[in-house]
Every structure is written in structure tokens, then in C-alpha cells.
Image (tube, rainbow, N blue to C red; front, top):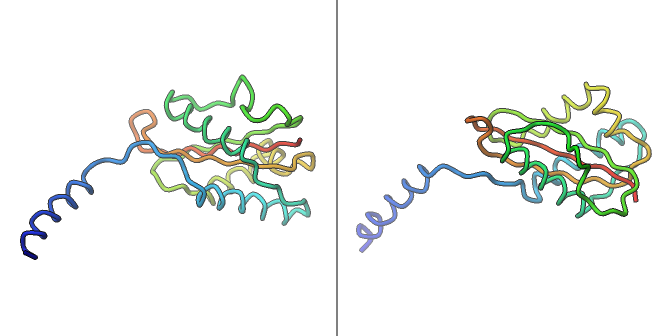
Length: 152
């Protein structure tokens, strides 16, 4: 009986390991880690922490998916697709090869860029949303981070 189960389970496990993963969006853990990193950066500069916004989270994930699906990497020309109640909005993007979320790398590159740094450290914003998508970008495994910030 045990041998029969093993003969059935082993091929299923091997098949599961060989099937490539499709595009997947980051769930709450990756998003929470990125938001915590943004807030730690702000706190280190004497700025208040940002509150997580469902609307900005949805907007960030949706735009990360668009970038991955279309193979583009540019800021949205139509604006951030969050609640219209946000009167101030900002966006930072990051792309890297491989599939791990690499939030530290993204934050480090944003901290070193004057324009991205100014978005994350804006004293005008009070809310944040983050989205991460992994998949195939121009034929290679890649991950894309999108962070949206705003003020109601």
C-alpha cells in the first residue's frame, strides 16, 4: 500500500516541480515588506509613516501587470488608477531580472535617484500602495515593482 502511494505521489511531485510558474502578483507579504521599507526610509528622514491604501495597492498591482504583459517600462501616461479622491499622486517603478521580489534592491535604487527619492519622501503624501509582479519580460524571467503614493 505504501509503495503504491509512493509510485503515485513521486511522479506528481516531479511534474509539479517541472511545470513553469506563470505570472504572479505579490500578495500581502511582499507588499507589506515594501511598504514597511518605504516607511522606514521616511522615518529615517523625520517624515511620518504612510498608511496603506487598498485603492493604491490595487492600482500598483494593476499597473505592474500591464507593464509585464505589454513589455513596456514607463510611467503611466493616463495617471494612477486609484480613487479620484486622491488629490496628489506619485509613482516609482523598478524592474529586475529573476523572480525574487528584491525589495531592498528596489528601495536602494530609488533612494539613489533624486526624482524617485523626492516621490517617496514627499511631505505632501499620506498613503501608499505597492504591487509586485513576476513573469516573462522580453523573454526573460523578471520582476516589476510599482509603488503609488497619494494624498486624499
